[in-house]
Amino acid sequence: MLLPFEELPKEFRNDAVKKYYNILKEKKRSIIVKRVFDIVLSVLLIIILLIPIIILALAVKLTSRGPILYKQVRVTTYNKKFKIYKFRTMVENADKMGALVTSLGDNRITKIGHFLRKYRLDELPQIFNVLKGEMSFVGTRPEVPKYVDRYTPVMYSTLLMPAGITSLASIKFKNEDRMLETSTNIDDDYISIILPKKMHYNILYIKSFGFRNDLYLMFKTVKEVLFH
Image (cartoon, rainbow, N blue to C red; front, side, top):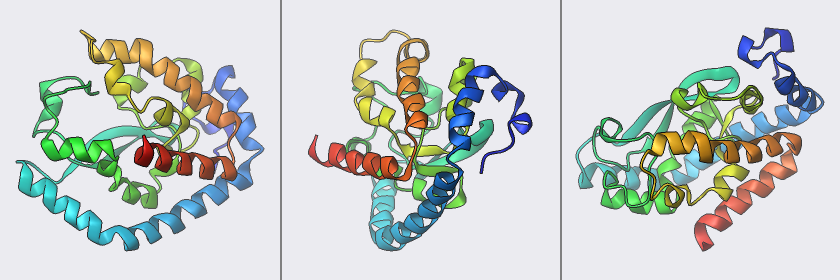
């Protein structure tokens, strides 16, 4: 549910965010339906995918040193921090060996990590984030606090709803690593070039937010992963 505007964190209380807040305020029923859908689907997927999840967990554990899950602090609704769950696709302590985003040919990615990333299987554990209410199936991909600190006023409007496993922006930028392949400063180029473009699509999502659009983006994501 949306908080009253005056109760939002101070960085949200600006005219740029209020414009999109008012759009979502008129869609309260859709926001409730979205949460109910997230709970029901996440429970069903956990039951259906439990064995594949266990198999992938064993594959990660047996093919490289380190924990099965990669947990990283990200930002979701109202600038709240949470730990996102992913199957680990990089070598142990990869965060200390380079940028927080990856580029094509990043040598920190493990062999099985390449496979998991190609089919987005590394994100399966995020079903549990959805069940906990920290994420939704569709919404702005959660950024690390370091990048959120660089948000412009209007970008905070994307944090009026839970972060998502997929989004229009993540579909459009599915080859983000290729865009950063020749970068000499990945973090700076991500913040100055990639992030503003992704936010353009994230803000468009708010304008068109609705249950049907969420279903469309979910099916489009599956299509992009399997056939491209």
